[in-house]
Image 1 (tube, rainbow over the protein chains, first blue to last red):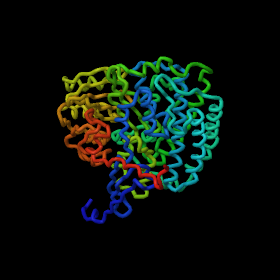
Image 2 (image 1 turned 60 degrees about the vertical axis):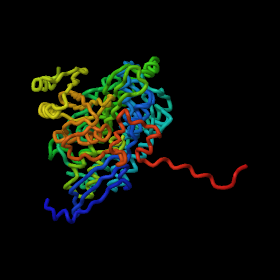
Image 3 (image 1 turned 90 degrees about the horizontal axis):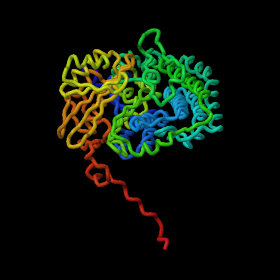
Image 4 (image 1 turned 180 degrees about the vertical axis):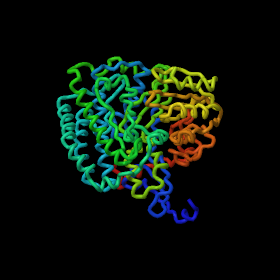
Length: 379
Length: 168
């Protein structure tokens, strides 16, 4: 790039006040309509969660974690709970394992429904923004009936789960799933059949999965390249019920560029992710025992003081590998060090290499298709 | 021992290993060998994904760095542990091998004061400029209100007195 081109360059900030920039700010250098430099900035949402975890006991800690990403709260809080269970050697009743897994997949469905609407709203395709958001309300109603809260659910706790499924909840759960399945063909037709949407997303934000892995991407952005990388199969957590279900990892293949994905593939991938989540729920519901304990009675005492240890717990979140590394000292009441690893730190960082060269209007398509959530990198 | 563990130890014999479970391995790496080890990981595990890098403050100027890599096709998790000491410890940056490590290294630098030599972009990542050099994740950084002035963050404003006359 010759220096005189840069003389005409214009720097603009995308965020933090922009409506599509929910708590992040990216400095873009534009020459004409093209982005030549992209500088993602983090820190607008930083709440020092890792330091806070050093002052919270092991039952309170999960509440901090779910605030990292409220859209997938059941998934977000789980790595902390799992790490505590590993160090304290807490057994989890089978019924609680299934209930956790069902709620985690519900959380995935809800998160995808929200992303779906948000991404379409950012593209100016408002019909497809509002339709999934209507369906999302059904999931939220079920969460509210189960836990008393729509977003900060605080469901998993060391040793099991906090609340049992009620009859009313089961009705609402079925209503949410049935409605999703009922409307899915219509949504798919509306979304993937829209020529405007296809034109705006085809070949936009194209990268090869090998490059993606170097950035640290995981989850749907990698699976959309045709790579079945999924912790639900590769490294399932022992206190979840993924071994009781038979499912295939959804992948999307780009016919023109094998091993790569564009924004259109990543949308297709989210459809498949939601379908598989519902499939897992439907397989688990009949296997749920009618009655039985939902929490290990000794867990509360065990989680009061933990022995010395280190544990690393991971779960396949909606956006990729979500994990927590925990270190405790002997007879610890609080964590000595807790490191939260959110998947989106990689997808936000990737913009730095991915965006330059594309048009300014495509920036939000690339950003939205990677589904970054600021809580995951700012913590 | 997993293949990658053997490959690393064959090339650099002073590295020791601990098993962490099935296909999970921890390597204790001297600080000056870190770039060599990460290069071997990059060559041997072609789908290695850098999960995170983070520091641990063990007090009395003792620090540890943990690097985590995951390879889905071989289902191998590699955890590297590096011990560092000193008031302001230093280590070579590895983000030219795995660009995904860049932000993690920036975060460790601002939170723990561990310097990454040859880092391309050593700005603050999450902290405001006033906290540069305060290293808030170190254990000696106390979080009570008495440090508020030192941090440069404005103290909370006193509540305005309610308008109107005395109720007496």
